[in-house]
Image (cartoon, rainbow, N blue to C red; front, side, top):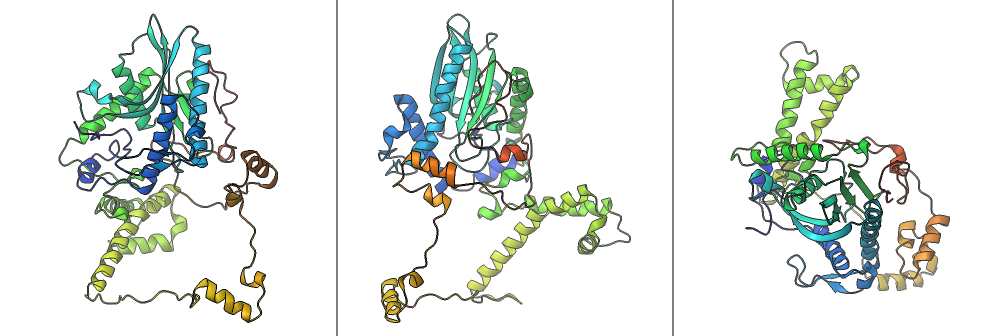
Length: 442
């Protein structure tokens, strides 16, 4: 069996776009820089859990030597330690919570362990490795509480709500351990230190979270149906937000036309939704929509806006091809490669320029104008202790909301965060007031 599952739980595309599995198989499996850096944090997390030490124990040490993605390993720094320690602290807190909630039970932690959701559906290509699994085990009836935790080292917000990766991990664990009637609770948790509210979860002990054993089974069944669709040699390509990191995406060098095709379909269908007299073509319709945009309904506006990415991708590919042909010696009517806006640079090295400017009696502060350090740069200074950085952050730094801008919001089960959540500090949560059986962390 391969080291990588065909339907990996961490691949968020195949549950939505069955054809992506077929298309991505044609591209080389090369990890990006961000993914490779994240692997370093996962290795550090595993080492800390297995050896029962804090992350700072590995500060300035090299870990993961001879790894296929980075043979020389990762040099651990203080920032990585801080991120991983957030996850370690959460795990420790959960162990204590579960011991209080289920007296007499043994609480176990498993790191980097296999989860096989496909087993329940007769598939050997749907499995993955779960970062952390926490179980409360009663000596007489077995597992009474099961939690899966996925650590994310990036900045892109990942929702915990009906997260397909977590659903696969949790359901797979239930199959592996044949958990039966004694189970009293399940939880799916995301730990993402670089985001606001770095710890978020969906837990069956809170009715408002909408997750239960029966709901989990329904969601797993949906994924099983999606998995079956990928078996079709002619499986459809379905565009959406999940396309962002797809290897077949034109923005990443691929040749997918699904988004463009969908955009053309949306615009074409709208010609019947909006009252357009006569037998106008597509370009005439777009012209009418733009010139009379105030007559369009909110739904129609949204549909036209949704079509933008597809058209832009098509035009981007056309411009790339034009540039390629011109650079290859061909001519394209009306287009040419011309220099961009000119910029001024010093004609000699910095050292020579400084000497010559001083010879012209320029003062040091004129040559090197002073600039106040940014808050972000100040908090990264190695000369400051953690306590000093904390005091600077509390006393000298304030957060100013960015300018409001139009953005595309949630899809699938994800929901946009409200304003209060977006401006909540990393240590706050709107779940602090929940009356549940468990004690919330963060």
